[in-house]
Structure formats: structure tokens, C-alpha cells
Image (tube, rainbow, N blue to C red; front, side, top):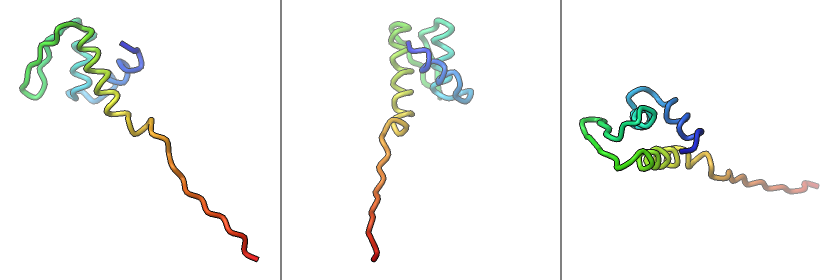
Length: 76
């Protein structure tokens, strides 16, 4: 997994889905319980992909280019 993605997940507030997944990933655990639901990932690689998907979903807006409209006129 990308170190930037893992760092982002670990920096999320305690108890958030990303933080819980990152904690499991760094602990080498593939069974995660969050909000009363338990998910068993097949591998740490699959768990890493789940974290990457959360990262992508949370940071989509940051990657979108901004659009600015400018209009000029010469008054004369």
C-alpha cells in the first residue's frame, strides 16, 4: 500500500472507518469490526485496497481542477 494513503488513514479521527482499517492493517489483522459489523478480508492486500478506496473517495474533490470564469471589457 502507498505510504501516503496509510498515513492519511492513520491520521483520521479515532473510531473512523479509515482509522479502524489502518489499525487492522498495521497490526496484521484481516478481521475488522466497525459500527457493529464484522468484515473478514481475504488478505492484507485486500484490506489495503479497501483503505485506498476510502482515500480515493475522500480526496476526489481535491484532485478536481478548479474552474474560473473571467470576463474583460474595455470601457472607453
